Length: 88
Image 1 (cartoon, rainbow, N blue to C red):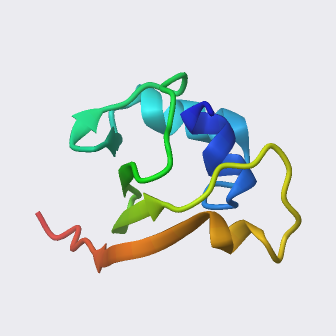
Image 2 (spheres, rainbow, N blue to C red):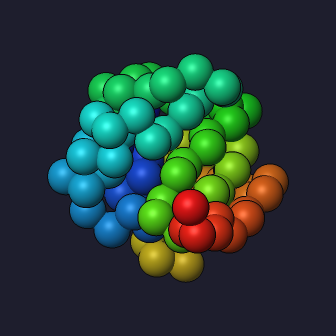
Image 3 (tube, one colour):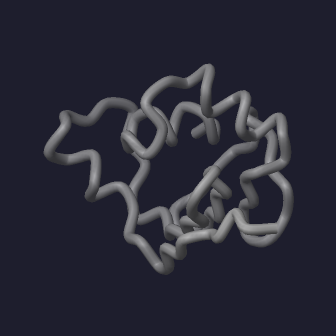
């Protein structure tokens, strides 16, 4: 499954176009490597996403084409979530 589609289905990022934008800026890594929006994901992959105020690391637990709101959080597990200080 494509990275941008997974981020939308899992509701980590609300819109696929925003997921493409973030990936295009190099703020998403898959297994430690910079990822494009079109990168293919597998179960067990580790994603690191750099948002403006936080860094989120997740592990992909399941890939499905359609999920409802309640099932979306079962697609991944959070490994680490840390706030980023913007005092630089």
